[in-house]
Image (cartoon, rainbow, N blue to C red; front, side, top):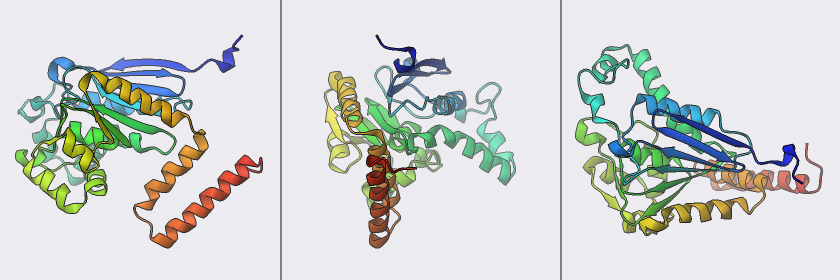
Amino acid sequence: MTSAAEKPETLQFERDGVRLEVDGAVAVVTLANPTKRNAQNFAMWRALTEAGRILPGSVRVAILKGEGASFSAGLDRQAFTPEGFEGEPSFIDLARSTDEELDAAIAGYQEAFTWWRRPDVVTIAAVQGHAIGAGFQLALACDLRVVADDVQFAMRETSLGLVPDLTGTKPLLDIVGYSRALEICATGRYVHADEAVRIGLANIAVPRAELDAAANDLAAALLAAPRDAVVETKALLQGGTTRSYDEQRAAERAAQGRRLRDLAGLGE
């Protein structure tokens, strides 16, 4: 009989178009406002931030997906109206704030996008249909992307006179390089499934009906390896984008030393 201590930790949370479901080592975060194609607003960003904060330590893999036909059509266009969202600052209000206030506001919005890169969890975006602007950046926040064959990525901020500011520029640069990243952002064009796989934006493309199964299969493959080895490997690769060759060699040695001592029962 399984003791209470051995039962997998479960958790459910739903607020402002975000649903979090945790079953043991896997968390599923769902954008759950399909009637608006999961368009994002400030309340949704706060809910996404809260989902990251309450994620149990048992979670090893987090899957992010969108309910309905689209992953996320980007920022809710109501944000661009003079009245904005009730009880929230409009873009005009933000523009009139001090530099410090404006910086703090954007930093708060970015928190919904940053926790997906935490070292102890591998994150997977399962993306179908439109992933526009903030939707594209949310998919880029994850470590891995599984896409449906109908996916349409686009960075449309420049067409609105803005820039991508929700942490998407760094991963896009790391994945596709400067020239292609500039072209994708400056033109706002669509990147479809075949190109996404070819240039590294997606790990795999599958028929729409197989998207959930493909994400689940990838999660299961990630769970097959010991957690500490995966955590060390993720940290090693994340840091490798800014280290020199010799610095990366040293980081490999240090990480392997920790793993060997741990496997020998000599860890701290």
